[in-house]
Length: 369
Ligand SMILES: *Cc1c(COP(=O)(O)O)cnc(C)c1O
Image 1: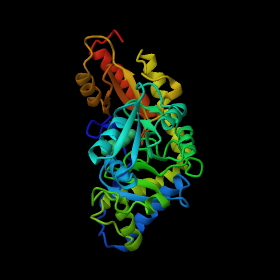
Image 2 (image 1 turned 180 degrees about the horizontal axis):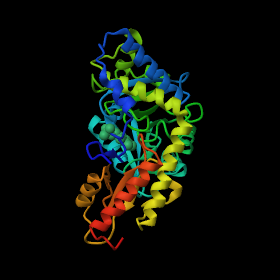
Image 3 (image 1 turned 120 degrees about the vertical axis):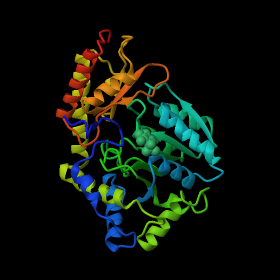
Image 4 (image 1 turned 90 degrees about the vertical axis):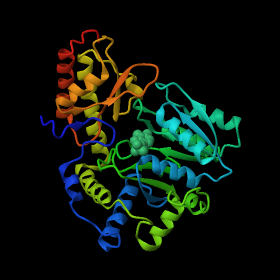
C-alpha cells in the first residue's frame, strides 16, 4: 500500500485511472482543430449518456461543479422568475444561497437529511404558490448520500407546466437519467465525479428551447451559458481559455467508461463497492446513517463511534497513513464520517479500506462503537 498515492474515498476529486492522468501529458492550443474536435466529441458523448441529443444542448463551463450550477440558474431563470428549492442537505442549501446571491426570488422546502423530498410534497407546494416558475432539486444529495425520487418529481413539475433544474453532480453517469422520459430544462454535472475525470469543468444539459429563450437573463458575462453556447456553436471553440488538460482527461475517461460498458457497468461497479463497504463496516459495528432504500451507491454516511477515544482528525490521519482518504461528515445534528464508493476502485479496494479502518480502531482502542 503506497502512502505516496493514497486512494481517495471521496466524492470528487476522486481516484482516477493512470490512463486518464496520462492524457494530461499533452499541451493543447485552444485554436487547435483537434482540440475543438475533442470538445465536440465530448459534448456528443455526454449527451448520449442521457439520450438527450435531440432535446438538449450540452454546454461545458470552466470551473468546479458549483460554477455550472450557478451558471444554469443565472442563465435559465429569468430575472422575474421564482425558484422553489428542495432541500435535504448542504448542496440543496447551496442552491438556495445561489438564488439569494443572484437576486432571484425563491422559496425553500426542507425535509430532514434522511428524508427524501416526495412528488406529493412538490405537487402541494406548486398548488399553493402558482408564482413559482422553476423547481431546483439535488438528485443525489452528497452531504449524506440520499437519493431523491427524480422521475416522479419531474413528472409532477411538468404537469404543473413548471421548469426543472437538476443538480445531478454526484449521480450523473452512474444512476440512469433518460431525457426522453424525465422532463427537465437543465441537468448539471461535472468532470470529476462518476465519469472519473479530473476536476476543473462542469457541464449543463440545457433544453434547446429554454436556452434559446435565455438571452440576456444572466447577471454575469463569464457565467452566461447562452453566450457560451452561442459562441461555441459558431466557432467550435470555448469562449474563454478552456481547461484543456481537463477536457483531454475527461475525453479519455469517457473512452474507458464506454469500454467498461457505459452506465449499467458503472452503476454495477459502484453498487458492488457500496455493498461491500456497508457489509464490512457493519461487521465492525459501524452503522450507516441512511436506510438502504434511500441510499445511493455513491457515498455512505456512517455514525461515528461513541467511544470518547474516537476523534475524527486522528482517525482520518491514521487511515490516511494506511493509504486511504476518508471524508468528514457534513451533518449538524449527529457526529458522522463519510466514505465514497465512486472512482477508479473496485471491491478489493473497498475491502482493503475497511480493513484499514478496523486496524485503526484497534490502534486507537476504540471499543464502544
Ligand atoms: C460535488 C457537488 C457539487 C459541486 O461541488 P464543487 O465543489 O463546486 O465541485 C454540487 N452538487 C453536488 C450534489 C455535488 O455532489
